[in-house]
Amino acid sequence: MMRGPYRSPRSKPSMSDNSKEIVLVGIGEIGGVLAKGFLRLGYTIHPVIRGMRIEEKAAQIPDPALVIVAVGEADLPTVLANLPDTWRSRIGLLQNELLPEDWRETDNPTVISIWFEKKPGMDPKVIIPSPVFGPQSALIGEALQQVNIPTKVLADEAQLLFELVTKNLYILTTNLAGLKTGGNVAELWKNHQSFAESVAREVIQLQQALTGQPLDAKALIDAMLEAFDGDPQHKCMGRSAPARLERALAHARQHGLTLPQLLNLQTLATA
Image: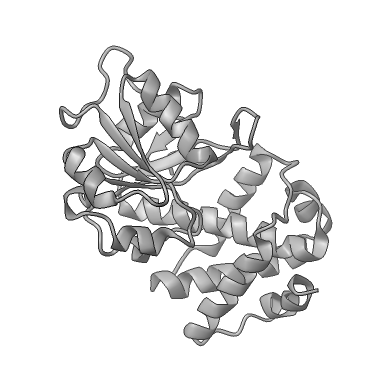
């Protein structure tokens, strides 16, 4: 499995087409980091925010190098459903809890699993290199290199799936277990390993149901622990934890799964 940071050639910037324009749908902290990197590469950023008529923007910019969809995961289905056809082959996705089913109606998107944290007023904090796959992987890698964020370009869709599930496992295990334990990821594994691993294995069961294929639980847990080592002080329970638990249990019901640890955590999420 590829683990080294991506290094792009300094003398030859990657250009898969002649466009020097980037469309950014949603202006959050992560989108802002990417925008800064692209600006340093000489690209023009065209933001799309709530209330804008996206069809008019597409008519003005019919041939962008990339359309980065940087909205939250809850808004992603609506945004993708309303994207103009001319942009559908140029999409870049970066959401948490992302799986291939989420982009089934798009055409070969570039997907990055974000492994850096960006809070208002603070520089990005890298946990591990962010894996990226798709037609504009090198371009995204170059943009993030401009702001000192390492990436790694993946070889195929199988590697992408593994990386997406790893990120989902990390987020869901830490957030959901954190409803009970609090603390940071190092404390979670040191003081509550049996509980954390049982939550992780239920999350993997759920990911198997959502992807429709078997997954290597040991390899995924090992990859999650590598991310724990990348930022041992990372807090477990974010403010989105109750909503993530509710969403996970809804998916479990849809697929006929019984996940005892997650069900037990429901009372803590609603307390």
